[in-house]
Length: 173
Length: 188
Image (cartoon, rainbow over all chains, first blue to last red; front, side):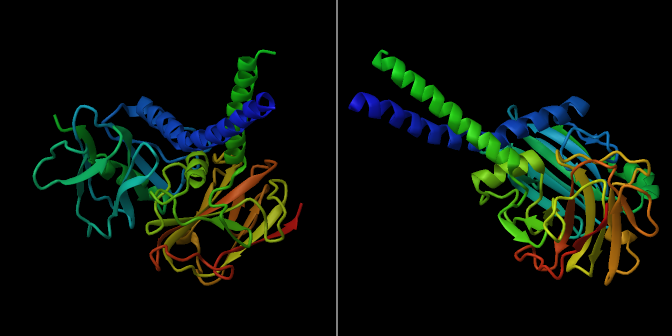
């Protein structure tokens, strides 16, 4: 009897395990793909100012055509990465940091920053960051730092684009 | 059949079935499917450690890099107010009132989550372009319309995503059915 019950039971247990494992790994896999795709455009640990999204945009799903995105695919394996978001002439802009699991490790907008630059150091636990710089601790080495800027009128985009290019992303060392 | 072969076959089949079921569930899942308000679905835990594995997986597939609720709330509609799938060959009137948020935008996507090709190169409508925040309407249709128009590109199925940025309540509550726009099909 056991030889007919135990194999299906093992199959059932592994089906549940396979389901949970796949669900858990989904965000890691897709985030890794997204990070690599963005990295191909400007490289790692550098800020890439993407053009406004159109129907040709395929690097990220559900891009907002009302936002200008500047992204930095970071890799802190060899030390912290410094991100500097400079103010732009727009009613809303924000800096957010997404970890490898797609969780937001940090987000701040221009209203909270009172129009001042936002300067952070993305780092793994234990990595020292420069004095006076806000540390954003992440669990995994890679992810994406993203600046979103509201573009209410596409005619304003050239001025916004020039200003956002002052923002940067670079390794500490 | 040898006993080890039975174990091996059941183990492989179990793993494959479990993984396949997970992929299928995520692929058919909607962003924020946990809460439906009229035609809109939403969720409050995007981008947070509190998100369930399923929510996290669906968001990573359909709306990766989503912000947490206090910064932005995302409402998605794949059906109209009568519950019928949004059809790119039909004409809809999306009507709304003032929403308790700093600004909002409504974007049209295909099912995969990409912007839809159209001759006007119009992909969204944002609050800044709406003359009367208290009473506004947008026609979503394949052919050019008078007033505010969001082109469908004549695709079979489309979705609308409403982003509300910096919600007045910090994102803790959902917009009500009265506060969210209605989506009424006017013809095909």
